[in-house]
Structures are given as C-alpha cells and as structure tokens.
Length: 116
Image 1: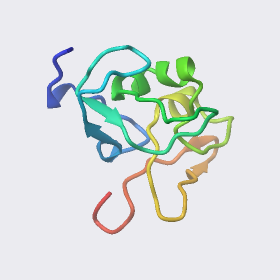
Image 2: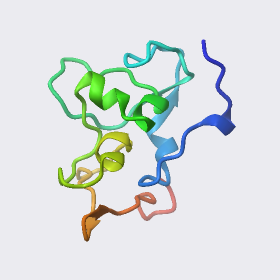
Image 3: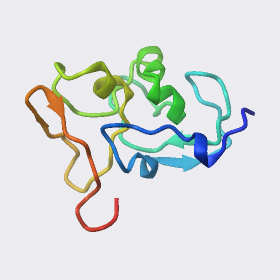
C-alpha cells in the first residue's frame, strides 16, 4: 500500500470541502490499482453497474474519469478540463448542479449551514 499522510491529501480548486466526498478505506482504486487509504463516496455519472472505486489522486489528475469513463459533476461541457475531469462532486438533498459564470465554475464551499 502506498503510504499516505493527511498532509499529502490532494486539494481541489473548485471544491473547498472536497474532503467530505471521501472516506477512509483499504480498497484498491480501479484507476491506479493502488490502496491509497481513501476512496470517493460522492456522486458518479456513467454507464456502469456498480460505482467504480476511485482514489482522490486519480480524480485530481483526471485519470479516473479518462480510464473509467465516469463523470463526477453535472456541468456545462464547455468548462475547463480541471473542473470537468478533476473535481469531486458533492451530495445534496436536491441534486448538485454546479453553478458557473463567464465560462468558469464556481468554487463550492459547502451547503451554507456551517457543515459540508
């Protein structure tokens, strides 16, 4: 297993509270075939029977979306690759369409209730 510390956890420019979209796990990421200590537990869109198991690092570099043909955010296709392929989504009560303006996505900071 690759050693991962809290300091090495990737950051995501469009999702300030992305950490809430991951859980600790010893499962193997289906994109990099490594046990990295965390897996994504947010929304996924695509044609698959079971949600793929993916680590934060494969989301950060875009390889999970490319290799597994998965989308993590509902968005306008004309936004940046960094947003479309490298941003973890969020779970909300009424669905999580992402706000955008002037051709760029907004940065998500949580649900507005002090939590994420």
